[in-house]
Structure formats: C-alpha cells, structure tokens
Image (tube, rainbow, N blue to C red; front, top):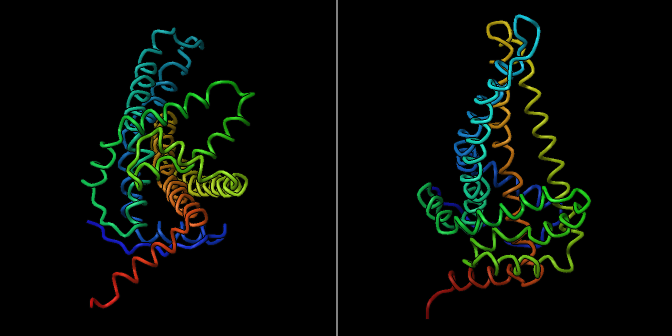
Length: 278
C-alpha cells in the first residue's frame, strides 16, 4: 500500500505545474511506472509479434524474388485483430489507472494495486465509452481536427472529475466543460507544452535503442530485431505516458482552485484538524 501526503493546493503557473508533475512522478515512480508498464506488456508483446509476422513472412521475398501470396497475411491479420481487442479492453485501465492513482495520491489517500483495480472496474464501461468516443472523433474527418481539439481541451478534466467527485460520465463531461470555460486557451497551452515534452522524452529514450538494435543485429535476424524494437517502443511509451496523465490531474485541481477556491477549503480542513478540541 502506498500512502502519500496530499499536495498543497494553490494556483499553479505553467512552470509550477510542470515541476509538480515531475516531482509527483519521481516521488511515486515505482507505483506510476509499474502500473503503466504492466498494462503495456500485452500490447508490447502483440505489437512485436505483429511486426515479426509481417516482415518475416508476408514482406520477405521468396527465392524467385517475388512477394509471397496473401495467404501469408493471415497471422498478421490475426495479430492485428487480437491487438485491437486487447487494446480496447484494456483502454480503461491503460488511460485510467495512473489517473486514478494520481488523484488518490494528490489528495493524500492510500493507493494500492487492489484499490486501483476496484476503482477502474467501478467506472469501467463509462471510461471505455469515453475513450471510444475520443477515438471515434480522432478518425472522423481530418478537416474537423480543429473542432475536435476544442472539444478535447474542454473535456480534459473528465476522468479526474469522475474519480475525485464520484460522478458519472455525462456529469463529468459537463463538469469539465464548466471548469475549462473562460480558461480554454491557457489549458490548451499547458496541454500543448505537455505533449511536446512527452514527445521529446519518447524520442530521447528511443535514441538509446539505436545502439542496442545495432548490437542485436549481430546475433539475430533483422525481423526479430525489428519486432523487439517495436515491443520496446511500446514499453518506453508506457514510461512516458504517466507524465501527461499526472499533469491532467494537476490541471483539474488547478482549475478547481482558480474557479472554486479549493485551496482555501483544504486549508480550512487542515486548520480544523489541528485545532485543539474545546
């Protein structure tokens, strides 16, 4: 069980928010990284196998110098289908477990693996519906991307609101929209910077794979090395993803501080708890 001290709520400037995000990640690295990596293992294994099947059978030229027939694509299609089913099924955990743990940690509540699983299962279908909706929006019409960005920013606090305020999906979507209202551009800027930072972190960590890949090519086939590299990239992404998820929790708390003076409520609770009884 992981017990943490609640963070001190206060209005966070962009630099403070980034600093608090990495401080929280460092403080609970084993918890956040462990959750994310464990949940990424099935997708990493399936992604590695998909690449191996694709390049070792379907795209490898035959002795006659031509590509094999399409029957060799069957293992690839099976792997892709399995990866899709597993990815969708695990989506509430992949995108909700670290957020739940960050919410509990930020509020000073105890966090345990069992508690995380229970917290996600209680909201499983609502979380699944939300991420399917976001995914559907992503693939419907490139020309609508500006509209989707506007909506996504307005929904930034949906998942934290569901966990912290124990509310349903519809109420959480409306709640997030009201919190972001009037602060959309600031929220967008924060999220944009966070995305840039996570991309840079991914690229930096992936750069270490280049040397390892060259060394592996000495003892293994290029198809096997490619599949291992792809699987490792999934694991690397899982180490970086908590940064964005923790930051979203802090964005949610910051919005509540600025709109509802949540920091004053926290201070009043501390004063009440430490005041001598009469």
